[in-house]
Image 1 (tube, rainbow, N blue to C red):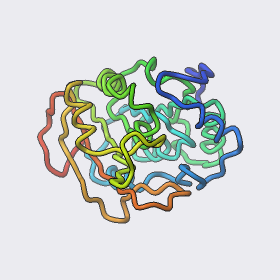
Image 2 (image 1 turned 120 degrees about the horizontal axis):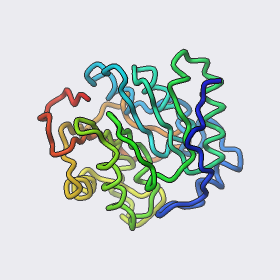
Image 3 (image 1 turned 90 degrees about the vertical axis):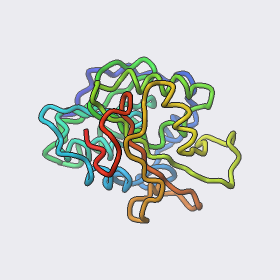
Image 4 (image 1 turned 120 degrees about the vertical axis):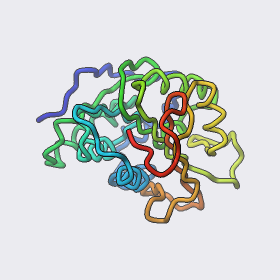
Length: 238
């Protein structure tokens, strides 16, 4: 037990989303297959090691959470409530099974929410965007940026895994669509979010690697804050 379903809407589509993902999940996507990492993202685990200690009662959101590996990792790091938001009903079901099977003492802190990111409301200390933006049609990118701004608490942080970075692919080829740090700056700065930590070159141990990945794409990490408060440097705390 322990997996909350308070915000389940069972939607099937929202702006910019492809039904490609639900078809993959509904077909029985295996752990570690295609875009499923099989465990927490190495990029997130590296970022969590550098974060300031998590404050009591802190909340986090993971849009496009898949099997909720990352949501569970955030709960394990001390977040009191982590919302794993997924559009695909089949992915929500897989996430619930994964959390239940984990047996983790913090599993009850994860709430699987089957819903539309663009209609989601709340105020979070941390939002983790990993292979979510790259799955959305480019036509909704400005809405994506505005939604992130609206979901952060005043001192909150948006962590973005910028993946896939692949100069060999044209910008319009996707999903997943190739990303870049410059692209995210152009999207997030007009929405009022500014980078307080950027790691354009991550070690191999922190590269995001989906299970079925066999390409040359790289990962960068950027931490964003409202108005750029909090300075720069390596802390990037929350």
